[in-house]
Amino acid sequence: MTTPQPGAASSPNRAGASTAGPGAAPPKPAHSPWLVLFVLCLGFFMILLDTTIVNIAIPDMIDRLHASLDQILWVLNAYILVYAVLLITAGRLGDLYGPKQLFMAGLVIFTLASAACGFATNPTQLIAARVAQGLGGALLTPQTLSVLTVIFPPHKRGAAFGVWGAVAGGATIAGPTLGGFIVTHWGWRWIFFVNVPIGVLTLVLAAIVMPNLKLNRRHRLDVPGTVLATIGLFLVTYGLIEGQPHAWGKVWGPITITEVIVAGVVVLALFIVQQYRQRDNEPLIPIAIFRDRNFSVMNFVGAALGFGMLGLFLPMVIFLQSVLGLSALQAGLTTAPMSVVSMFVAPVAGRMADRIGGKYILTAGLALFAAGVGLFLASAHPDSTGLQLLPGVLVCGLGMGLTFAPLQTVAMRNIEPRMAGAASGLINTTRQLGSVIGSAAAGALLQNQLASKLSESAKAHAAALPPQFRDRFVAGFSHASGGRLEVGAGQSGVNFGTQVPEAVRKVIADTFHEGYTNAMRISLILPITVLALAALSCLLIKRRSRGAQPGTPAGAAPREEAATAPA
Image (cartoon, rainbow, N blue to C red; front, side, top):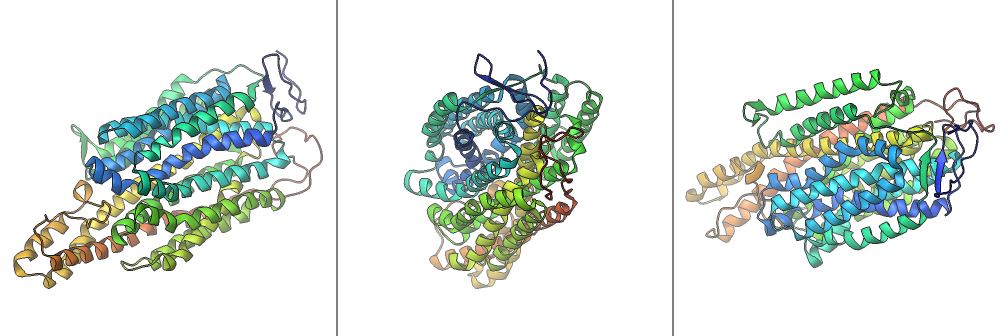
């Protein structure tokens, strides 16, 4: 097969597959690119929704499944773990077999796994089904950016990524709101059952409107690289998730959590060496894409964004329901303004990135996100109202909205279509790894702080109790961490039995509310710090050179003269 010259338009073949070579103009799909974008976003929305919608159902699942906090954390993290580990491989498989095929396969697996989640009768079954969900989500996600990079011309990608960014931000933040409504009216199982009709609809639409993109070259899968990346990412993320429950000690026989994480880092280092040696063949991650400073910086920014979001949501959801006593729906409505603001701001930010560049938009967005978390932290008290928390929620939403679309625009601007799948898989992987690390770090820090803050609060409140309750009261809160901590709806951290006078119950509740709030405040300092570092890193974004057409590979002549614009 003859490879087209740079600038040559791709054309559909007899099977309806469109081909795209390096530097080639975007193919003209049979259907409008905006219709394709709608279908991609519908599937992507469903996938990303499941990274946060489960958070709001934590108290209900603990109550109804009789699960420990450790088990529920695995319900959250099993999905993100598998999702993050397999994204790079899935992006490359999209290059190999076509993004449409991988997108539809991911939809089928995710939809079936969602039904299995809804029918789960114990935490073990639910965790297993969530693993399958993560597999389906990983197969689907990289194909969205890969297809958008190919079917949209460079001067319209910012707007397309703006819509994509609005969906990404909206899905991630809308999870608690939609989940709260569903849990309140139908129970936690329906947060999974609702995916089934959406998945079926998206599958039908994808079969009809998605172009069957194929590249003008044959690919092969880098099996050694795939194995090394999968093992390395699994060991690192598993160690981070299981660190606190195992007190950072032994986890598999004599093997400790620290040794698991170190082994994962070593395997990932071997993976990088192997990829470098394979650079002239077909590595899982084309090393050449890291020559673009913007892509490298955006990988860190994406990880920081995921870290900040999950680092905020986990403590926030428990605070809203277990401390403020809100229902799942009320808690969701409290965070709803974050979603609304983000969804409206993201498309505007995408268009602005096309015109003035994304450097300072990203810097401002991440700084505002960090400031919003700080405002929430400052206004969070055991007797706070939704109105008092609103300023922090709104500023967080504004910051996220300014970040999602410019991040993708800057990251993918100079990526050749033939590398779009690998690049998309990589940048989604770093964001999800940031989410895993953020969730694990926030959970570990929160549990660590609860161990001390609850004990301090119990000692401070013990004097208000009758003498016969004091020793048991202090001892109960001193050991209330990890799996023994009860944070179901309306619960107060520790179960002292039913034969407790009402006056004592009030002291127990006040103790938990004060201790949890103080612990949450310290845990939220971590995402603020990471987001601030990400904002500073955006100053490294390189300005686009005069006359360079976005998406034009280095060293290739641009198809037409482009106006000067910053990165």
